[in-house]
Length: 189
Length: 78
Image 1: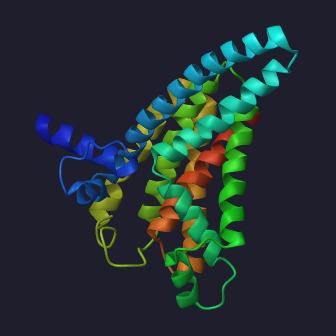
Image 2: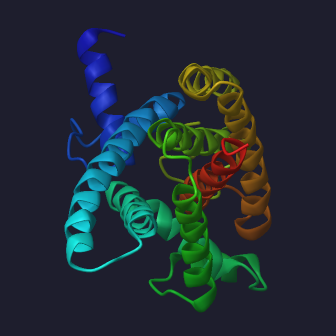
């Protein structure tokens, strides 16, 4: 792969997996399918952004809480981890354009329905059922708990590794399964 | 198709190279768990949608991240 091709691939993958508008053209989806084995590398970069956000927001929020503590006594450590964990999960959701969150909602919408066609229709409908909403919020709450209880000394590294693992999970499911529909996925992994 | 699937082994190598230096044996554990969760989600996708859809791929991303964070919070506290 030439240097310019490598840069184009990197930009296309980043554009595909995030809302960062660095895609080099309309074929960035095809490029992403072709080079999906590089997802964990992009996951590492996304994790680095999120870990940076975690540290920066922690610094800002602890400064604010320190000031508030001068006026009124508050449980600083608890509030700090609560605020930083919630906003880091939100940061990751926004950075990925809520695309993956939408996948959870659609999966939840479809679970428990009778026929296969019904389930596929439920996944494509522009509605959120209580099952879809519950599944998505439950999974994100688990992620929040993980961040909330993480040992602060490891937080930076854990966030990076968690994002690498998430992308590895994506590669695994694509490598192991057969796609359901025609599109960029069919025949491309 | 098989060649492309074999090429996906590179993804595991990349994950290993990032995770293990950062977290040691816990990083290795995470690589294994994310692989197992990916396989589990493939089974879920097959039973719910008859295969793997974009929704399932996204749901896998969120699920693996959540489980990994909780797992690491637990094992690193030991």
